[in-house]
Image (cartoon, rainbow, N blue to C red; front, side):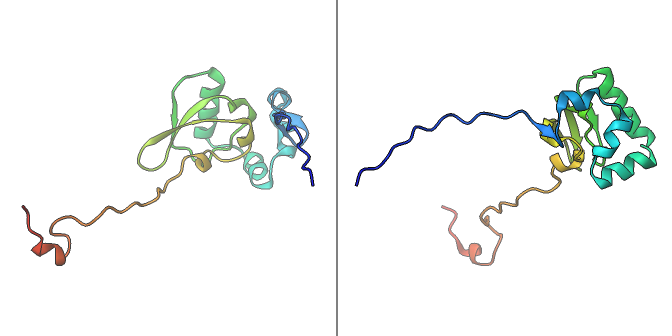
Length: 137
């Protein structure tokens, strides 16, 4: 029985859309047009109004500042932030995150993880009772 070989075409990268709108279209929209497209939690946050520090971060992004650092892990990623690199604090250090179109309307904290995988080393000399009798030479 002969096998048929099919030539695979390279996979085309489709342009990202969010609920039928491209990133360029989302960036052209005003806040009142964006609110109905947001998920419920983000929509609630915007309807209640952004805090002063969140407004300040948005102002820095709009001004085109480089090297933006923030502790605001609860800031929602707006379409105008896409393509920017923002350093987000994870509790110990700032992690540089380049915001992709797929991250629109997510929180900044989702991209700067606060916990790491623990990789324990081996026990050293004096760490356990059995290592007490290991010859040093």
